[in-house]
Image (tube, rainbow, N blue to C red; front, side):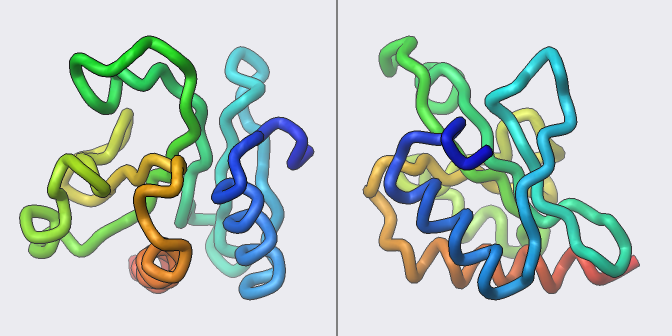
Length: 127
């Protein structure tokens, strides 16, 4: 169901997670068919959520156009250092002490996103 997501970066992420971790997106909510998560295979914990939201939900004052975002886990002590509200935002619709949001519009390099996603995968292994 990768046709749900349109951005180049969303497709890069889907391919990366499939090849790196052998995980496919799970579409869990009938009411929100454009939102999906990745879970670890060993403990079923989420390590990423690929979502479509109105831009102004992430960046106040932005348009109300729909955008694609990635929510991933982050070490709580690092949140204040990585959230710059330009490339990385507080976790949308997640616990902002443990999650960050990245807008998938090309403002952040794919390698940087992959690195943060790898960290999220590792964090999801912990109890």
